[in-house]
Image (cartoon, rainbow, N blue to C red; front, side, top):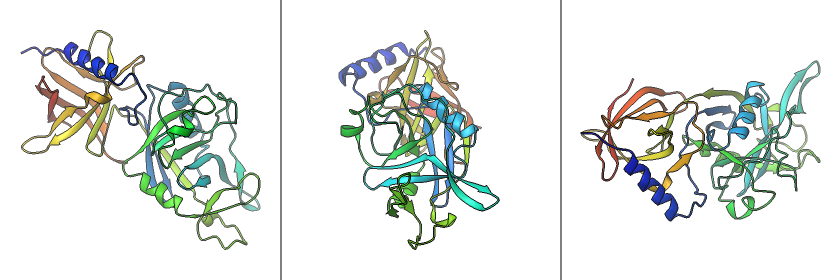
Length: 309
């Protein structure tokens, strides 16, 4: 039996039209994923490469240059944001000190995605939408009413995944101190108010980047898929059954057509009804490859897991 993705695409477009092309709070994304280890816990950020290519490339450039290695979170405003990317710990002949991160040229604003809890966005100068460089922040609550509307909108370029918000919730509970004009709202661990030690800082150790075509998080599989005719869709599938087989159903309310294709993209065969995803990240350390699924119900777009490596 030959399956067609054209009908699915039409229904996807109808769903998109129904919501008026509004920015939704959660978007399906694919590759890459940046994982950070810190003294307050670990977290991973799924980067929205297809929607914010300039910002994602900029963020990856800072990671590659090790600008965020030994970095610190220098700003915490509970129930608002936690910010990093501006300062790091450097070691010289006199010991450790806090230094500013060397920045590249500012980038163009790419605001398209709403600043909801768990999303990651670029910081920038007031009244200058195109001034973002190295600093970024995590939204600790839904800040869309504020940050989506000022200064051209703050560019969301990723989201925290794999329970990583537990780390930021822990940072949010730390006491905040004013250490001067550069660090007026810094979260510190067990600070005595007299002598600042390296151990008092919320420190980033290493940052690793994994290229993946899909992410499975909170029973949701997110990926981009080539359905033919030069059409790439951003898709989310919910896990709805695990026995006797794993069954996923496409979430029609969260489908978008991409204007550019991500580096890693799934493919769908209209002849066989087979969906093939090159790789799927399950957690910070586990990636499965060559994931194959079969369309078992074209009416409600359900797929069954066939195999993986």
